[in-house]
Length: 67
Image (cartoon, rainbow, N blue to C red; front, side):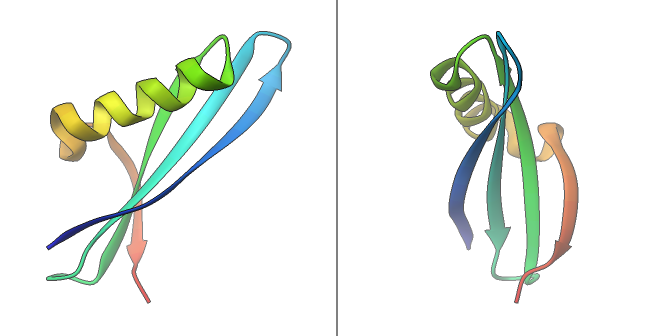
């Protein structure tokens, strides 16, 4: 089963924001991360959410054990 965990948004520079969306798969106990980008916090979070919904496996950039 797929689990949405959270979104963390961080400012990189004046108009450059990053969103880190975490999700997990309980069948493999693996945690994943998708990054979103934008000029505002809302754009970055929206980009990460869109990637999660469109094709989360394509956009996953990091993974690890889900504990």
